[in-house]
Amino acid sequence: MYLGVLTEREGKDKSNDIIFYSSKYFKDMASICKEKCIEFFIFYKDDVNWKKKTIKGFFLENDEWKRKKTVFPDVLFLWPDIVHPTRHKTKYMEISKKFKIRVNSSSAIEAMWDKLETCNILKRHGIASDGAIRQPETLSYTKENTRKLFKKHNSLFFKPRSSTWGWGIFMISKNRDDYTINYKENKWNVTAKELFIEIEKIMKDASYLVQESVDLVKYNGSVFDVRTVIQKNKKGKWVIAFMVVRKGVKGKIISNLHGGGRDIADIEKVLKELYEDRYKNILSNMRKAALNSANAFPNAGILGVDIMTDEKGAVYIIELNGTPGIYDFRHVPLKQKKDVSRNIVEYAIYLHNNKNV
Ligand SMILES: Nc1ncnc2c1ncn2[C@@H]1O[C@H](COP(=O)(O)OP(=O)(O)O)[C@@H](O)[C@H]1O
Ligand SMILES: [Mg+2]
Image 1: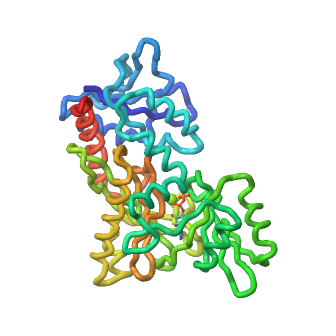
Image 2: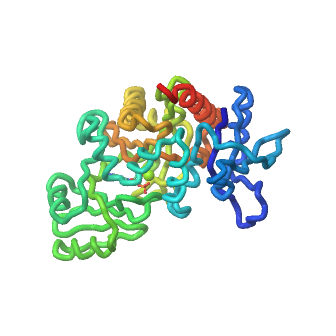
Image 3: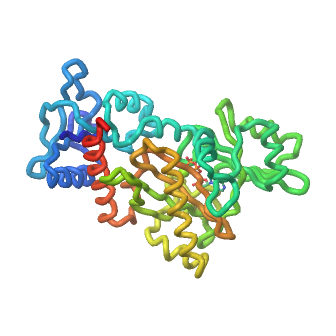
């Protein structure tokens, strides 16, 4: 069996083929494949000969990447880092779809590119805006829906339906006489009359959703969320690979690492400090939240689930990602990162063995 990873050249020097930013993890995958007698290679989109169905891939031999002509992979893994907005994500999705068996399902990835669609899918799977495991109440952005949500909630989040890294997100709180807008590092007040003019000025022509703002518990003065990576294993069953806390910058409304946040691996310590003896129950609900989310996407093989908690300990699913960054967390132990690679390989084998089922 051949397992191929579609990735992209790193660095400006296009003549140097062998600069892999993620080299360490590719080597992990290569060594796991070797144990299992599977051929493993990495390739770039321009290395595919679509007519002849061959690829000039990189194979690891004696710790060095060697270029060799090979057949199409039996199973494809789309390297998560290349599927992001600055790298023409749609183009890579289209290429990946030409390979029949894929660890990451394109329908799931594409559904998650639309945050509103994701909320609706979760809703259909029974994740409501109340209960121990919930999602914030969410509607498509219209003036009417905004008014409707302001009747129930004091603060609302506005998010571009298709964005990442916190881009374009703002929050508005209702005061007695006016509203306060929080956008990037700025805060300003507007009257009820000016409200929608201001909102639509920020939105430009992008399609937005409007969502209840969760009254988040703060850790050392900052908001945080928990990135959970859940994967399918060698039996095709969901398992949680790791959970890591992402702590935002004080005063910011978002906890994204791209917004200056940082990660903390010891989630139990954080939850214990915040919730004392309730922490086990909350942690267990977080795990359930990840599992429930994953079950809403039966075709997916790997999923990032971002989870937050409020003062009372309710668990909120905030965002799902079908191509979750795995290796950009500095504090996730290497052993756990290697387990992520192992699950990818073993699930690929499972898919290959069950392709006719
Ligand atoms: N409804 C909400 N209530 C409170 N904070 C939120 C809410 N939605 C998002 N956030 C904060 O904003 C961050 C970015 O939102 P998210 O939906 O994950 O968008 P992105 O795709 O840009 O990461 C979250 O990680 C969280 O810190
Ligand atoms: Mg996010």
